[in-house]
Amino acid sequence: MIVGEQKPIAEIKKIVGTARKLLILGCGTCVKTCFAGGEDEVATLASALRLAFKKDGKEIEIEEFTVERQCEDEFIAESASAIARNDTVLSLACGAGVQAVARRFFRTPVLPGVNTMFIGVLERQGVFTEECSGCGNCELAIFGGVCPITRCSKKLLNGPCGGSIQGICEVNPEIECAWQLIIQRLTALGQLDNLRIYIPPKNWSSSNAGGPRKLIREDHFI
Ligand code: SF4
Ligand code: SF4
Image (cartoon, rainbow, N blue to C red; front, side, top):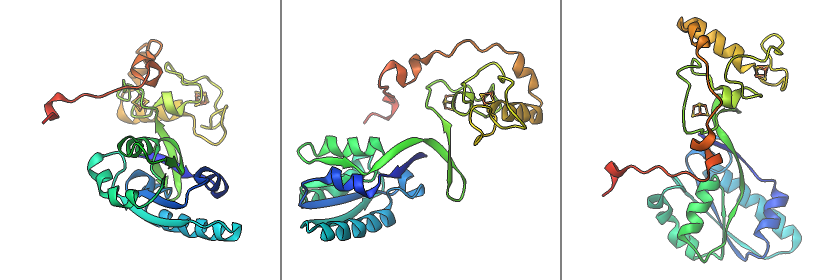
């Protein structure tokens, strides 16, 4: 899932600036799962903003609406009437959702209420970890299903740096050494010989470093 966190309320207040009729638009998929922008977060933020603006003596109407996914036109369309009733939209989706709504409603300011952070997993309740950098050329098969590009602080592809202490990364003591995890997993899979494979320097042209990417599936064209 895409993981993000809601911006601080002081920043949101600043962003919405001169809005008089504000729609807070939630997204019911990734950002709901990471408690940044689902229906509950929309309601909580709306209450907090109403209170904060009331204290400031600013008159503002705040409407709440949540769609299943802000990155798909089919769902965005459901918010059309709510958007038409307001002069500004504060989107609680990821950056892709914000842009998808802004593209469709070209004359309405669509502002981000969430800081989009990474592609990750729910490690345990309330803890999300980054697992994939979307490099466009997945090599997890060689690494026993642990991504060194994302999870090794030095992005090493041909083995550990040797600096880990008791399985903890020498660069970031808050994470496990990715290479320790790779070796443990390859051992469990009986695939330790994978370590003999030389991995050439990563070709980043398939990643975002080569500019924005596009996936075209002609078999799904109508
Ligand atoms: S190898 Fe690339 S696509 Fe695969 S998990 Fe790592 S960053 Fe993501
Ligand atoms: S300690 Fe492990 S995760 Fe950290 S930089 Fe070295 S090899 Fe990578």
